[in-house]
Amino acid sequence: MQRRDLLKAGGAAALAAPFLHVRPARADKGQLVVVSWGGVYDEALTALVVPEFSKRTGWSVKFDAPPETAKVKAMVLSGNIGWDVVMTDIPAVLALVKDNLLEPIDYGAVDRAKLDRIPKELQQPYALGQRIYSFNIVYNTEQLPEAKHPRNWAEVWDDKAFPGGRTFNFQGGIEPQLEVALLADGVPLDKLYPLDVERAWKMYDRLRPMVSKWYTSHAQAIQLLAAGEASVGCTIGPRGITARRSGAPIGVEYNGGKLASDNWCLVKGVRNKAMAMEFVNTALEPKLQAEIARRVPYGPSNGGAFDFLSAAEARDLNTSPENIKEQFWQNVVWWSTPGPDGKSPRVAQAERFAKWMLAG
Image 1: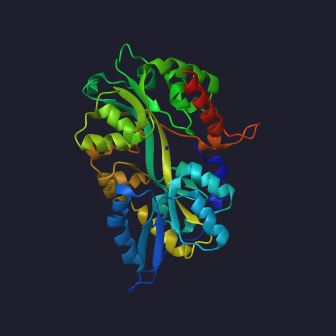
Image 2: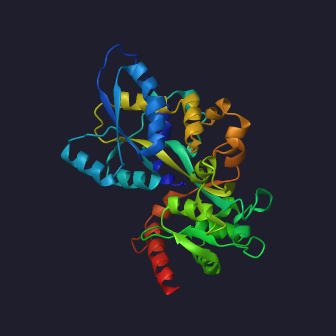
Image 3: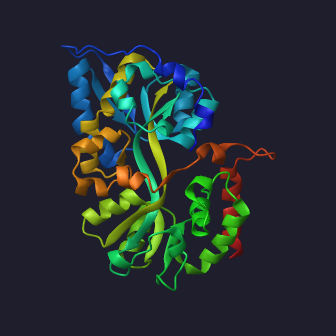
């Protein structure tokens, strides 16, 4: 789910800081408030990370959701900090950094062995990656069996060789999948950015008649694919894996996938930064991340997690050594940098997408 240049300053200096470890406490010392997206991932954090963190520190953890940037801003401006640790995506991180609403990550509080196994793209001054999602080729295995499914985006655009409807995202304010359109037109993974916007839109013109339904949520995309209303689409791969585990006829192809991350951040003025960083340090434990991935198939940020997973388990995860090398990190810095008109590509392309849909 490549946003990184804006966040790079300060990372190296932080890495040079001495390690900080919180001593285990024998009594309840306080409560940390952690904010995420809720659902089964938070349930996994509660079951696995919280007991280990509490054992180390004597602190309890309360979860809240969702991680609204407006609420962070209100807390910081009022000085009434009710949240400590927030997990959110990089577009939100960039917005929070712009308004000076986050504390820098204290990399000295994270074990070096963990940092060595976390991709550098996920180690930013104000954000440290935890779970990885990806936009992948997701398909109905009854209409397009494993041996005959599209294995790249060019084949997704080929509805003669791979028949059936397509489903792609459309929702007000959300940008189109320009990267995968360019991959479908033959642009190499390492040559995507800066995006050739006009070339991508020509591919969208070709895609339009193939789309049987534009989805407005990833849950809807999985429903459409599972029901056979579309044979193949572009949606969140881990959701497809979850559906398959529940018996849905869903397959996921990782080649050409667009990787993005949900990341740990600290609210400006966090009430106990050392304790907040110890929670992050605990959440990055490879064995804990492996167990979380068994329950919820988002990619672990710590590559060491795969030391605790079987080959079969790893095949379902987008950050496995085999899968990650076939994908690319979305460049959110490119998407978020304002142009001469003051609009970022994210805003400009979302507006263009809405007009393009109306014109169809």
